[in-house]
Image 1 (cartoon, protein in one colour):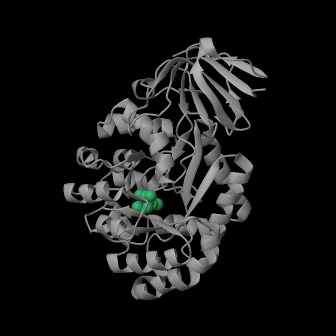
Image 2 (cartoon, protein in one colour):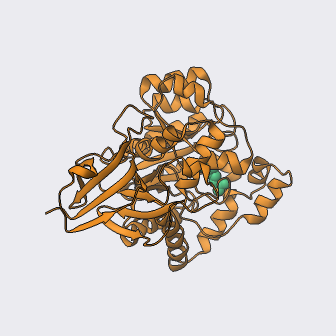
Image 3 (cartoon, rainbow, N blue to C red):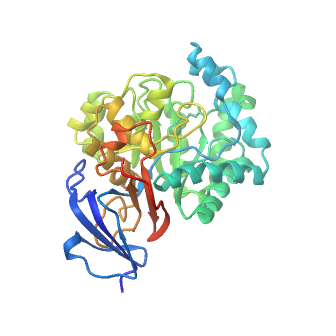
Length: 406
Ligand code: NIG
Ligand code: FE
């Protein structure tokens, strides 16, 4: 017998069409068994089930997939943020040993329990608002012990929360202050010390390949070492300046290239040809007050778009993918359908999780129920809570009883 049947879904995003097409089904029903979608159809054709919930016209989306975050860290950088709003530059703060290094210092001195406590509350907020799969990076340790500790914390978080947490090793986030005069020694430490210790705790490797972070040669050496240890590459690319990170990333077979504020049309074409996914992070655009990336060129080149929060204490203190969908449309000129698709199926493809981000028989039963009848409310009611319920791996995480439709 079917475990759970949802009926009366006013607008069901199935994402079964072409990229960017949410292929909605109206007045839909979804049957779930053993953590998987068993059947999708019209409410009138639905069978029976152990539990039946009438959603009374609410919209339902696949669980939100956040393909780029940095959520395992301690401390706050609110004061730095205030300084940036007053005109100080992010890169100058970074060069002066603040910024990322500030979070590194807070994270290194946090106990395991403190780190777990802070990050599980962070992930709880994300999951409560519909994020059912999240990628997170190390990168606020920058020594072997703390990098490993961050990745182990991420694994514990997954166990505790039920959210699938995909881990990326980012020991090459920035050269830590203590290595500034001998950056070669730090690259060696990443390659010889960190990668062998971290490889079994991560699936992907990332490098902040940008002006003021790591150059192309350093990035190439680190990514090659990661690949040799079974890690798959993805890169922070062309965020602060165009340094050629996209070309290197495509050449090295990166599954995704992220940020892309300074991507050129030629680079977009390369990504389109190679099938490299663009992970766009509008929370950064909002909080850094920078111009948006050239989404039109990426779209024209046929690049698959994903939207992610890039949740981190420095450049995007934005945790909720519901907000990211709104920003994708309001800042990047993406249609609501495009934004919703990019935050679900796009994110799933960026993480090589083809079993989710769609509502189709056989896919993982991760669903978000909105308090609204149409996904446009995500952007239209940007200052309102819009999530009514979350189903994760077939289990109801929460389903508020009495909220009226917005
Ligand atoms: O994705 N670009 C590098 N890393 C982060 C920023 C981290 C920080 O400032 O703490 C990012 O923007
Ligand atoms: Fe990032």
